[in-house]
Image (cartoon, rainbow, N blue to C red; front, side, top):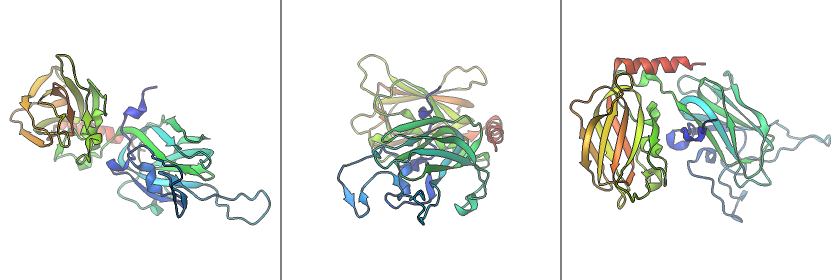
Length: 342
């Protein structure tokens, strides 16, 4: 099976994900489920609700095995709006640090909804079970592959009957709504528009997918940084654009890279629909540390991929390739959107 964790987490907060509702959050808040960082823990750190957990934890449910009157409401759940619509390839249910209070079982459902419905309006939707009910272990990262070839906008995590989950990761392929992109100048290299990294020379410190993320990075951890080269080569990353388009302006951002920015950068592109040969888009150009650099392109052709070369190595905060979708690009987005409709 391919490594689905290399695909973006469609639910993470930094891509716009939100935990809309939960059945209970008596011990730890539901919002922790989609925090971008790894679960953190410090033992014997007690708040007014007990041990503080970087995760979602519900109250204990009381079964009616003794025949006493109870408040047994079945199982707990959390409803998440994905930051980006897409085809889900794998789900991670991470019970990190929950050792005596993890749920013994979990399942995941998903649905697709137009617009921005409330949690209540999603109740009657057609929910598909993408991860059947299965066992969990404490303090463990569980990866569940998903085979459903459909586009989804929301997921629901069910835990049986209660307990704590540190993170929910929903890895998949972004499928952008073409109605929001066609006819406009867009960032052809934005992950949220469907662009993706297809190869790179080095990911020693961090993943190059970071350069396609929205917004500005908060620190170097949200950038892409390579190891120091000790040879005559240079580092590079290849990005498949959201759809075929003509770039008009390139932005190279080295924000936060103060002593480890590249000295020069170069950008080349190719169109796999035609020759597939790489052509120069931006020749080797000097860049400065900790800053945004914008370069207007005068005569770039239609491209499907770009390759950014760092000379000789270093880090990059963001890559933006602003341009116009071609007619073929608009058809590509439309066809993909409809092909995976529910």
